[in-house]
Amino acid sequence: MQSTPIFSPTVIAAAALAANRFVTFAGAVCGAGAKAFGVAQYPAAAGDAVALNALGTTKVEAGGAIAVGGPIKSDANGKAIAQGGSGEILGYAIEAASGDGKIIEMFLTP
Image 1 (cartoon, rainbow, N blue to C red):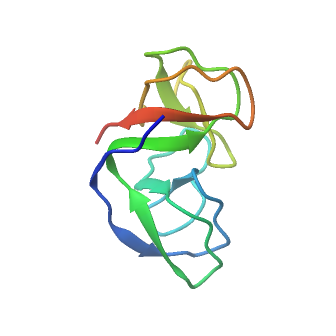
Image 2 (cartoon, rainbow, N blue to C red; image 1 turned 45 degrees about the vertical axis):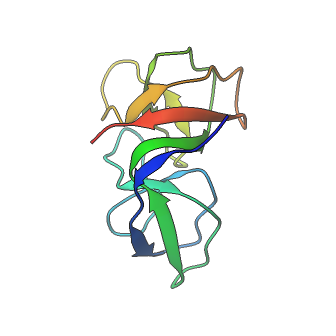
């Protein structure tokens, strides 16, 4: 597993952020099926600057099982879950996740 970011912007955390989870353009935890700006590279407290991976490949924490090549969206906690039904597709799994809490590599798409 690796991380090969192409674009890594910095945002100010609007709330406490966990590493490897989706973050919004406003620096908040990404909601279920919402558009994300990127994935936090490390944990951050509210008010701290945090670097995101926004394009390329990144490590992300899964919130459930995800198949290789499957589309990914955010759950209510900013974790990656399989995109089924509605919700913004944030990228595609490069590795499979067997369940909640697993760290996998994914390809982020704009």
